[in-house]
Each structure stands twice: as structure tokens, then as C-alpha cells.
Length: 109
Image (spheres, rainbow, N blue to C red):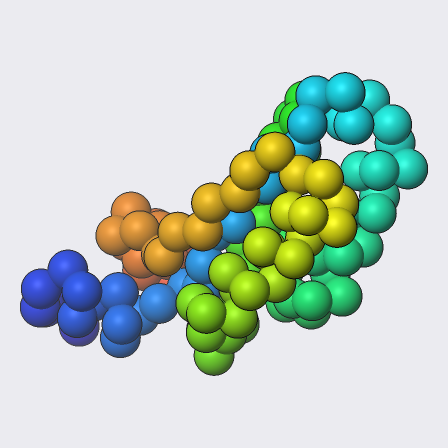
């Protein structure tokens, strides 16, 4: 079920994308600003799930695998200037995430 090279496995069993948003420290203390960022992400990426929020970092998992990289970067570049974000990063599904998804299904059988 899981044979192939790394990129092949990622393409075949992708779990979506990881989006990390780093807010400017001075803006992170303003709860309204945090809510604005969360609403913006949810509006642009309806499948986005907030996995963690710690200090000035927001960690999202975008589960919609049909979203294009170019769209994510276009939206986040806009957000960076509109919401005055410090930085962001986007990552593909890791092999660890794919393995954990398979392990979870094995435990159910």
C-alpha cells in the first residue's frame, strides 16, 4: 500500500498542507488582531484547521488537497501586508504525517 519514492507517496497519500503564521510580537498581544488573522485564514481556506496557537505562532492544517501552492502563496502574500504579519511558511505533508495516518487506520481494524 505504501511503496514508492518519497514524492510519489506524498502525491498519492497527501494529507494537505501545513501553514505556519508568525505574527509580529507587538500585534500578538491584541486579541482582536489574532481574531482577524484567524477569520482571514478561515475565509480564504475553509478547510483550514487551527492546530496550535502559541505566543505569536499560529499553526494550521489545510486539508483540501486541491488547493494550489500558487493560491496559498498569493493569499498569504496579501495577508502579510494586509494583516502586518511578520512571516509565514507552507509545507507539504510530511512522510511522518502519512505514516501516522496509516497507523491510525491500522488501529481501527
